[in-house]
Image (tube, rainbow, N blue to C red; front, top):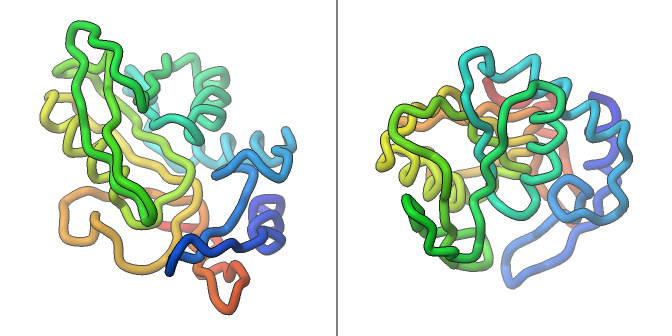
Length: 188
C-alpha cells in the first residue's frame, strides 16, 4: 500500500471552518488520480472485503463512483450509485447525508429487500454519510454483506455507538496541518 500511504502523506490540508480537510485524488479528484493508485486500492478492497455473495456494490455520489466502478469492472458485480438528486423513480428511497461541513438528502434506486450489498465509500470521517446510507439500506431490507471505506479519519464518528462495522484500508488523522498515518492497515 505504498502509493496510498505516500499520496496521503503528500496531501494538502485546507480548513473548512473548524474542520481540517485533506485534499486527495481518491476523496476529491485532485490532484490527478493515477491508475496505479486506483488499481492498488481496488486490489486491496478485493482482498479485504467479503464480496463472494454480493449482488450489488452501493456507493454514494460522487467520490465513491470511480473506486466502485473500478471494483465493478474487476469483479463483474453491478454498481448502484446513491445520487444527490431525486428522480422520482419507483422504489426510490431518500436518506439524510450529514458530513463534517454540510447536510443534504441523497436518493437510493435499484436496491430492494433481500439484495446482498457491499457498501463502498472513499472516506469515513464523521460517519454521517455512512450512517445515513446504512440506516436506509437496513430500512429497505437489504442484506449489507460488508462495508468498506478506503480512508478513515481517526476519531469519534456517528457509527461508534451503532452495530455497524466498517473495514478501512488506512486510518489517518490530521495534526498541525499534515496527514499522519495512524494505522497503515486500517480496520477489519
